[in-house]
Image (cartoon, rainbow, N blue to C red; front, side, top):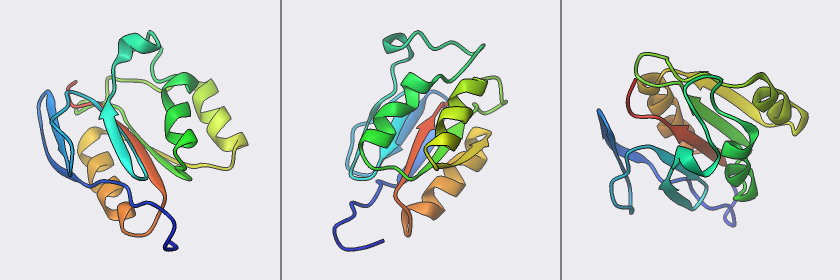
Length: 125
């Protein structure tokens, strides 16, 4: 990561229904990107567990410079990812990881040190 690249904020703690991100208030679900974070409000895009994460959910991460994206599918893997979301990320050359939340959190925090990484973290099911 070069000097001008903003570092993605680390996840400090996650529990059922809450995530604490370095430098931000707690969120229920979170959108994380290089230099920032905010609550991930599914109602903004109409996201539901099925059919799942849609392109509109990840666009903000890319707008903020994410070149790697981690998508969490929930603690039990109940949140799906729409095929068109994965296709869009692939077409844009964005490395994408789809993992259950505990593994997504671990990988995201590892990547923060060296990558322009973004994530969508779902803290429940």
